[in-house]
Amino acid sequence: MVDAITAWHSECRAAKVFGMPCVKRSGKVVFGLSRGGMVFKLTDPAAHARALAVPGAHLFDPSGRGEVFRQWVVVPSEQAAEWEPLAAAAVEQDHSIAPAK
Image (cartoon, rainbow, N blue to C red):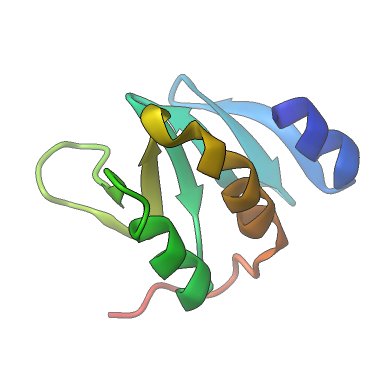
């Protein structure tokens, strides 16, 4: 999927952040592989809601201490069929939008 996205979108590059394989667009992480699933930064409320509606999906809490990244959704590996459309949505969104308080 990483190869397909980076070939399709000229601003995307494969990278690693904190050991997590990921894709960056214009220097910002838009999705990556985390423990148990794929993590997507989704600034569009409709795309974010669609991702959270996937069975087993949840907000990303990298510390495990309840400090979630509100724009980030983890979609479990059991739902890998959902990853490609969510990756495309993550790449196409405006990542300069700050999370709502």
